[in-house]
Length: 373
Image (cartoon, rainbow, N blue to C red; front, side):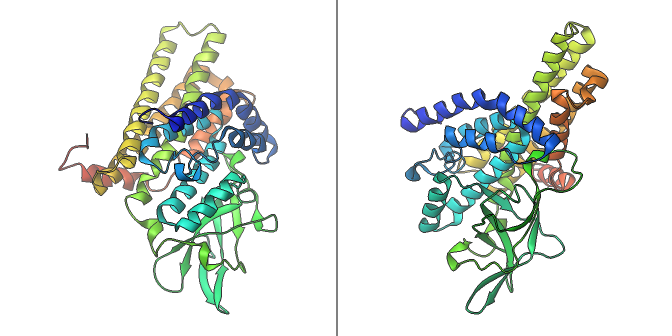
């Protein structure tokens, strides 16, 4: 963050404290990958550190991380650190940040104030936008609003208490709503047989019969899909994935040293290539976050830079996974190897929609112009 002052000091203290909990976060992630369950300890730690209120604007007692331009670098570092500890926790925390950002960007002052109060009270926000065979619909019935249908691929389906969802009204573009949920929700905790990211507790939630108040609706029709915000937010997912890349690079070096194989020329090449891939992803993540967060950039530039960064991070992550597998051999596929779960989680985390379309659109945009400075 630019300049000195209480907020800068608070962000520094938060970023200094997060690494102290990463080992415990990883231990919990390994256990949940095997036994199932929600990362309660990780979120208790993040809450105690102040990370759960960090996205709130400073006027509400937060750090503005993720909601104010000058705090973009702090949010990138925070997401990267959390991803290093657990990609599943990173996915859930990223959703928390993104939901608060949308409320701050499009909500009324009263809605922002309520979100701040909820975040300070320990509520976990999330974004659930994927429809299944019974899409979520926003109806008008008996003089009020009524929800019918549900959401799939909902991270923290039984644990997020303030999901921001998209619902289709009877006419017009989708609307955003924040729907308070309690333990009586109709949700399935996990998707059976998922390859990675098991600790994110991704599942489904049925909202049929829920009656949200008028004040639950955030913004104007179509705001969720409004550019460049809709595409630009992907940089925060890149930052989390970068943390997973960090963890795999650490595992490669640590395990090769432990085996006394770190000085072999072929292994040194792998370590060097892994470091190059990681730093490539880091540079793209930094560029994407700054173009997305700092005002003054053309909409097309923001969308295309973030799109290129997304593809660069994916390529870097896949390269590092390959290098870890070749460098550590069959042992890295054993479940008690710390890198085994991280590889599965990272490969799953990277599966975002339409990568080919994203790359082609970004390349097309920059065919006749250069990347912004």
